[in-house]
Image 1 (cartoon, rainbow, N blue to C red):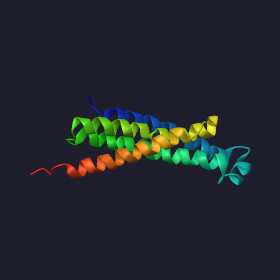
Image 2: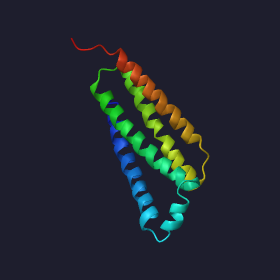
Image 3: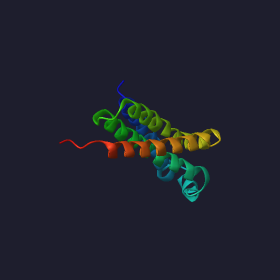
Image 4: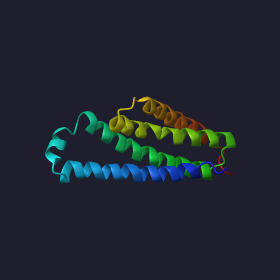
Length: 136
């Protein structure tokens, strides 16, 4: 199994989705008929959370792309590849959870699960990278 390929593909699709959300935010803040009202409420509530989803969605998408490339190119054991890959993918639940909280009023359970997952994936990949032997 090519662990990492899935992270790259998911990262690119999620990146596209959260970029689209960013375009919507730009439209609402600068081009929509209600842009003044939107700007006045920009730093609070749903507006702030939507921006947080946009920013974290793009960041976590890029992290999945980077993690995917590292998992494909560096000689990690299969167990590390598998777990880091799945944990990084689960990390995408954080920005998706923020968005679903705003859009549907869902509780922030996905936010917490995603945050912990991407944190563990980052730490695990960092430790595994430090343990790699340098080429002679």
